[in-house]
Length: 310
Image 1 (cartoon, one colour):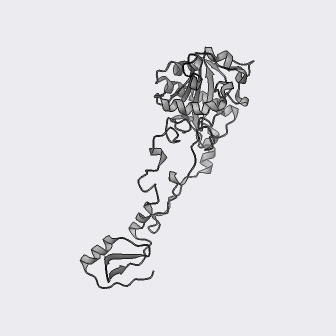
Image 2 (cartoon, one colour):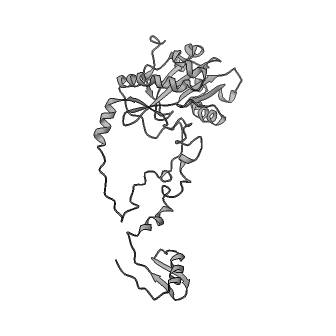
Image 3 (cartoon, one colour):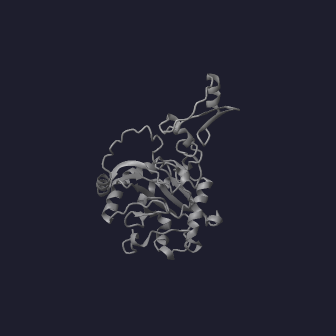
């Protein structure tokens, strides 16, 4: 450490000097000709972190944190289908639990280093990642791979919690959908709806036409399609996800959206049907094209065959 030179200076002037601010070259000046003091650089100075906070949104006010901005396209927003927000359950995928434990042994506490108070990895800095938010692109984290047996066991375990969560909404479709025809043979990963596993159901009005898949054409008025969802973490823990509903209104009731209305039932039973969610969902579904009536069908490997359909 190289020591600086300290001209004789009064206590009063020293207070003015220190209040003047730190210059990039290490000088602190009082703004009076002939009066200055040069301080030696000190890496262990307690407020050495303060100078860095301005550029670290994790330490400063998180005004640029998308988790605090309520936008339809915000992946941290619980009403956003892309957001992997769920309600925890006791259900797990045993293989992933074991894998997680082997890959993440208990952390060893590191001794505090007063010379590196700012050395923490800034993984919570959302401003450092500049990506366009595309709810249909699903380029974010992928759900873990499950075998057919694991997918079936996971859904069997979490199903009672799904039913209980959606029943709180009081929405008739959310209460009845499990008695409808099911069109997915097992739960499948649906990245367009976030990092979730889903199952497709259709009411009696939708049953025949929806089962034709790409040959379905325009669905009849009164059709209601339901997709329940659950989340499987890398650690194997399973959480309840939203229930997604599409209801076909009377012909001409909303031609801009081919008469579809979208509803999200959240794990806490709250409902989302406002204009923002209508636009959010329709903007994505319209990519399927008018020839498919804006429908996104079950991926081929997960479809129930016509011979086995309910």
